[in-house]
Image (cartoon, rainbow, N blue to C red; front, top):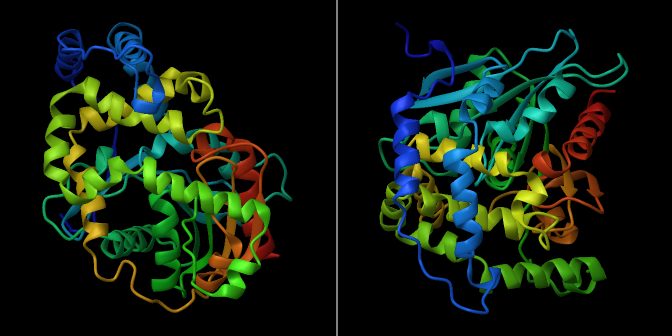
Length: 383
């Protein structure tokens, strides 16, 4: 069997694993709730207990599994690592291959509401795509990574190899969160293959140039202040994972309630409807699909390790030449800190769109808006 073989894959979790999950949830030792406290201290026990109860007795994993299996899935081994991906070929001969990269918390399921509209648009004048949606190495159905060194550069190289292995030698890339680091990296490392890069939740840092600071709009200043607030009061999860991944991973791998809290907190803080409960913003089943994928694949260590690799990669924040690939940036109101004067220093920005709704998870919150912006960006590059 050749090393580059591509194998069909179906999501099919053994019933014993689902029974074990339900049993562990039933035996959770819940912490007490400090009177008068709310979400500012993390996920309230009362909310988490209710959500976990639904996970155990109301959430239908088999139904979600069937939804995942409606789209063709595959696995292949790249650089010694298993890589799972969804691949939908459009019937349109002019369709553009499009690599869609999730972040954390996230899985390929994030993009399922966009997959068919991208592959089969309503009219011939609308750009069509061949969506390729991998589970990042070490995440979800790609399974745990088996050796250190899976940093952004190595992951980007693996995803570029995936597209080449599928026969796509010219393609677009979209990503958010982790994907907003990886998509530009793929474009920078493989400009001869990347038609364009589209991102949301692009991370931009002050350049130190007084002229850039003077040019900031009020919206830019608000985003800069929000980024500082995140660094000061919202980045504990990242610091733990980036410095002691094995320690936090052991907690998450042994307690489904802990894994659920770890993920639910981010849906609460990073969605556009942050004043609502997270299940009101994106739905209970969406939250539990993500939590189930990470729990059932036992990838907590690999997910945490990804932050460690990024934190300890000397090349991560080293000066790099400005990217040359055309880049489109979609900016949403919540948990999106992209600032154009800073972004212009690093990326070849050809489209910048600011939306009035949506947050860190637009593929879940505003799939129609994100789909339309992707179409408009790549459509302009091909006409």
